[in-house]
Length: 440
Ligand SMILES: [Zn+2]
Image (cartoon, rainbow, N blue to C red; front, side):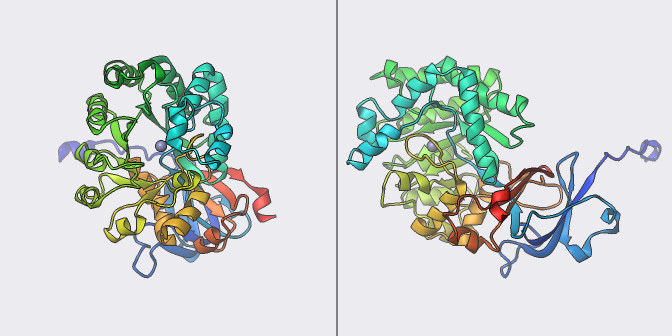
């Protein structure tokens, strides 16, 4: 008690409040505003107070209830009309690559499958060759543009995988691109980019017929080098027929876990390998794709209690011209925290637009609009283990916000093909993008 009495009063941390609003309609997706009648936690005529030093939310609520302490703080209004919500989270992308696969598009339309193209030396292999030939600076410039496009489309947090290098040197090169974008270009590209190593994206040609040896190379050489440079938060494996077996995926994921990286898994995309159960067993943050998931896999996700998030990537099925999608509605019935992501990559999902993915989720998987909004915010943040700071708006969370020109979420998705309905983006309380064209 004595020490407490004499303990010097700690200097309160310096804050610089900025009052954002009035906001016609603010979707908080958070307590105490969410209720059965108000599933997205809407506040009409709202204000949000951000601390522009720490980037956190200090207060939010109806304009009439703004605490006196903030009455004289600087204000920044909305940009035109519309609604605001948490910045979008794209929790599964592959943006570090050179070249494109436009030449395969026609071949696919003529009837060739993704797997046939890969067997003929195209597919991922085509992109691997181009990515290996590119310098780190070239890859960085390409990735910068792709991430900036995503930011302008409302994405404030983005997961980015390596996986087009497939050698020690080229995987490190790809992951250094992500690290340098965050460390050196953050002023120009102020989004959060979360790195994932995915050396087990495919078996490189030089290891053809020797998958086991490549798996050992990943476990013994690539992952330790990535960990020693602290280049990845997550690690991921493409577990499917013709790629990596369940047993091989397990070995890679266990090796990464031992190095402190959190597993993710490309699971049940083209075939069912019981990969979802493996993801849950290893405490993976997510199991992604899940087109071929069965009831056992679904129950494993239920039993994980939300620890392993199902991440659905419907733009991939759409871009590959598939007719079957992941069973999103069944997952929602089971109470699973379904997330959506773009899977942006040059081969199977040339779509860097999360808003288009949301529309595809509504139209092809019949996901209700409320569920779609949660899938690209709170649940996507959960798939990146960032739900403590992102994906919802409440006091203490980051003031990452997107404003749409639409009146409501349903109008946003109904108007799915308008070029860019984002009118402004805030990151950590700073307005980082204004799209004049949206509200002109
Ligand atoms: Zn992927």
